[in-house]
Length: 336
Image: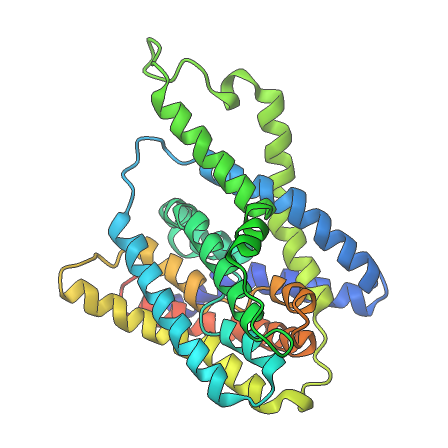
């Protein structure tokens, strides 16, 4: 039992500590809201984009793609999205809150803490599978979030496929992932030298360029977690009590429960194999807190950004506990 708790703590502790440090730094006056906004913007455009690129670049070009597993996770996300839209329709009368609440069912903080969790739980295998899922997850989360916010923006539906695709195409994380995928495709087509390696590798032949990008990528996740901690503000929760309880439940309990029930059912039917790496990736994809970018997107769409901020706060605070419990259960089952 102690070994299970120790394993779970080891996976969650670094994330929780960095968030607490960021929160403490804000309370100590080391940074203010203006500084945090600027830091978040820089980290989003430079840090996370280079992180996405480096994650894909490091994947073995000859590694077989786990198509069934990726398709399964996407199918579960679609199911959760439908549930989220239905729940938001009935759970709040406020139109500007519906789009924010709907996202709690399907949108996680996967881009920021996904690979950290996957590596903590399943090592390099978790990182590889988690990285492969980065591109489809970021595309899906962004598209469906814009759809949810646009449908319930103002008094009318303002959803535009062209505008949505344009927004997604300019997302720095998407650009980093696409460049990483393009690099892998090109690498697969290059002839091999006598050592069996491609005749040209950025990491080997342009080390100054790769090291620069790699250095930028390594600061992305710690910075994102510190900034997340600095942005947390537990106040003013009372005005959103019903929506908060519903959103936290969907994000931290319903989503991972349905996902893992579906995974074990699919395994029993012979459709997929639930490996430790898949479990790690699913904990990150379905059980992590609501994405911090939800607040900025809600503000831009004229949705209820205060509700979005509270949902990020409380899913982040409580999410470390539910993730700990999930990892402990999976460890006790012999799945991780």
